[in-house]
Length: 184
Image (cartoon, rainbow, N blue to C red; front, side, top):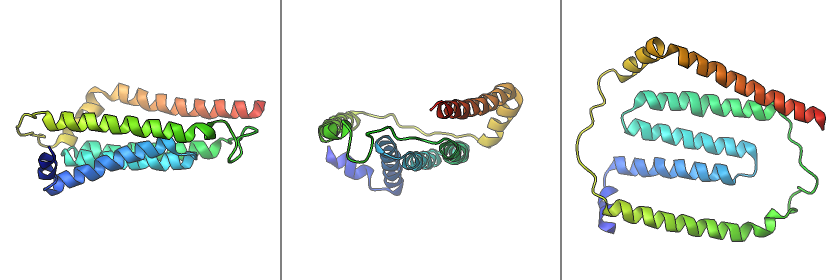
């Protein structure tokens, strides 16, 4: 079983895939476990960038470009601005070292690590026993040009509605946060 793993890691593309996959999963785990919101944003940015690397390996350069431009760039900066525009208040008793969640943390971490190891073992076994069909993938010529034609000719109305929807959602979140802040 481990011979397949060694054989798969013998070429550079598999090593890059492993690096990007570990960065994507690690960034997601760090985002969930981070205590400060800024660290969460940085962790999710690492995940977005590593996903862009995986897209490049799949020869989907346009999707990788959009991933970096929209998610790693715009969403991350938008989240940082959202954090900067809203004030966060600590509730009383939430000082460092206090609170009920700190007492359960070691047991919680142990259960989560055990579950992760079991899941990793099951996935590793399933992937080693699976047979994947061979074949070649033809990404086509001028893929970004065809996507651009579809996006700006056929699907231009949904594209514009989505941009307005995202802007309204962000403004609504800021207004709700400000209203809650004023009530306190």
